[in-house]
Image (cartoon, rainbow, N blue to C red; front, top):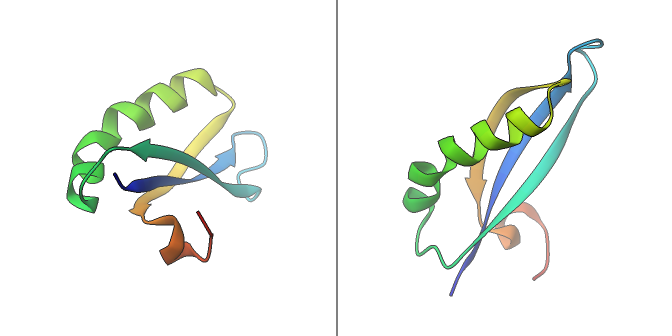
Length: 70
């Protein structure tokens, strides 16, 4: 079982220069390609639940590839 993160760069609508990363974990995916295919619905759901934020960009990564430990 792999842990893959969907990493969103989100900015506030009222102050677009204020951006931060949000990480969503996908468990039981076998590849980054699967993450890329499954990301759009998760991104849409996150955006719906956070109406004051705008998703500027996103990517999939293994946590250890981003300097995080498991």
